[in-house]
Image (cartoon, rainbow, N blue to C red; front, top):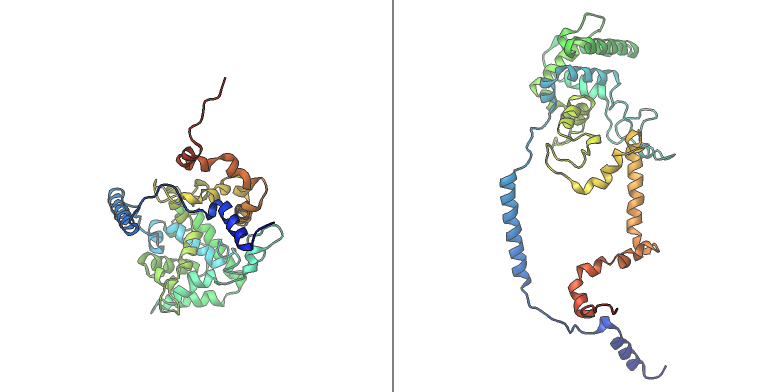
Amino acid sequence: MTGTPTRRRWASRRADPAAQEWAGDTREFDLVKELLVALVVVGVLCVALAGLFSSPDDRPITVARWAKAAPGDFVATAVTELDGTSRTASYGPPYNSFPGAGQELGPLPLQRWGGVRARVDTAQDFVLRPLREVPADPVLTGALSEWSSAPAAVQMEWATAYGDAVAKAPGGDPGAVAPGDYGPVPLLMTRLLGLGQTGALDGLLVSQDRFYATDYTKPLLFLADGTYLEDTARAQNLGGDQWGMMNETGSWPGQAWLWLYTFWYQVKPFSTSDNADALVWGLMAVLSLVFVCLPFIPGLRSLPRHLGVHRLIWRQHYRQVEGPKRPAES
């Protein structure tokens, strides 16, 4: 190769199109002005559309609302919390160490790997501890002492028998339960229902040692163990088999960008698997990895060039560069 290094670098620079100065059309514009105009237009549109279409503003579902609207479901759920048969009691990590519980991805026990990080004792946290906060109620104090002094097997018999009686009562009404050997459970449930209907239980379930009581894990778990929350959600098309992850309350559109994630919950084997969360997470991880590695996968990385979408977007540029197409000669 002839020539000095400086000349060779200059020649290679001239041969590189990216090193050439732009020789096409130019147009001056005020970036700050365009930014302000865009902000004003978008702001006006947001305010106008928000005022025109409003937004779903349903009342929050609290423990008090649940206890008033469905006292039978509230009491039936509280009994399962007391005897340890609720969904939360058998959920596993991060709430408890229930044997064999947790989502798995093949042989990988993903949920158990996380460990118990937010321990929840359903009997103590949802029933007994709130009842102990009731002041000046000697009858309730005696019932709590009777429950605590009884063997675990007897406690289970009392709670199971009372739960079955509530299920058989007309309309699930706790006040219409047939007489039986339930120990102190009926009194405990009556007092807990009273706490729930007055709204005191909502505060007792979020009370903690911290200054800010903003941890709503326990009331949400308690609500989720009953049927009232699920029935209300399904009435708003928010059920898992109703694409609920994407929906807003009522008929409003919601998080449409979640369609790919929630889609898998609607098809088998995910829709019928107890490990659906772990399976969907694993599948989405693989799909995301393929997307990230797309520039390095032969064949797939060439799709944009073959599809020619860029030519459609920059069609005016290609018309100027390539000129008008000549009709084919016959």
